[in-house]
Length: 110
Length: 126
Image (tube, rainbow over all chains, first blue to last red; front, side, top):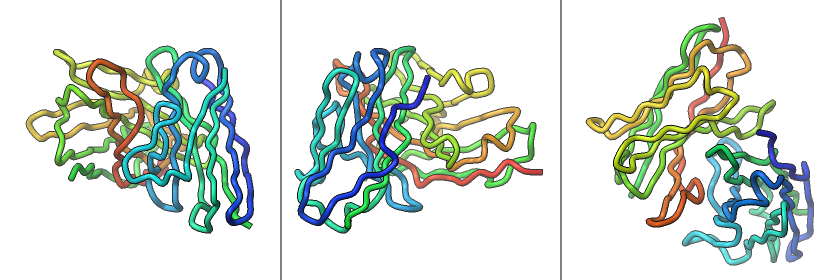
């Protein structure tokens, strides 16, 4: 199972909005509404930010939103803040009863 | 409050077996609305799902193709924990290993990893 494709880095200014893409195939992102997004601070475990493509767990800011079109999912962060400057990973359920992650995206808030 | 507490050695010799334990508090390894997973992370391989177990009238196991021939995940209902055993390790297995819960709402599949252990750095070296 190949990893999902994410840009290695994205950047934006405080207050702006950014998008992080996550491209898979018809065997994962395109076939299931089970894309999730994780935020990871250095040295910490990933934290769930979005599940089932666009749902936010309790306690996650509404500045974070998710969507999907075809084989590509996207994470949008609006009103960028300095604290958002960490790593983000997408994940999808995949055929064969497995899960596959993206390579991760480092967000810079300039 | 649900917590996952990992334990196990941080150094394993090549060709030996990597064994880790994940103790669950506040939930049950036999829960019918959760699945219990092992995930690892390394600079070279990124985040990699390794496998899971869950109980739905009987125990189910799913493993990643990349480790399927070398991995065993064991649930222990008496201790409410799960373990990971990865045999014939090489330096490529050096990584931070996480246990993680996937929520599985009644009537639908498991959707995402909503709870993670603290992670265990495991180095494979002689």
